[in-house]
Length: 231
Image (tube, rainbow, N blue to C red; front, side):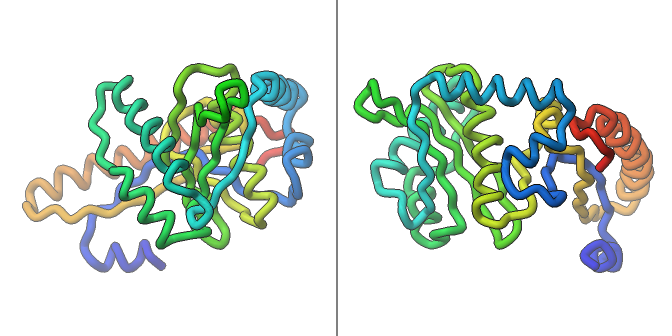
């Protein structure tokens, strides 16, 4: 329905892909792993054991449960990520506090604390959620811990979905490594208004070719699915 309305608005459609998880009848994380091939299942369990061996303590705070200290810790990690990657942070600590206050249970903050450092938050991941879907947004860490990125951003996100009755998880764009962890390539669509009719024609031809290439790429990526039976 949305695509039809966009077509009627004379917008140019563009096709892309991201990596998403869709529930297929599993009821918990172990049930999900049981749908994977043996090698993929073994690798994920090894990653989770490494994260557990770190001794870190994990906790979940919804937006209305997170306090000023939680948001301060998260924002410091957010800034640190941009510092390491030479980027420009665009969101203030006040922004995160505001969405926590106004969106409440729609905001999910996963924290990893180091009990050996007085409970200092050393990593955190921020998600948003609807009634059906979890959306990964930002993550940051103070230093590398084996398996922590996958644990905090993906595995605990999947557990949250099972615990709260969510059936879809969109952890963010890019990252072919997500396929091995149950996130399969899924079509995304956008629509664009181009004022210049000449440029619109040229761009429309390019987008048509790109769409065909995207579908070929998705089909190839899907062959690397970790699931024992086709999705």
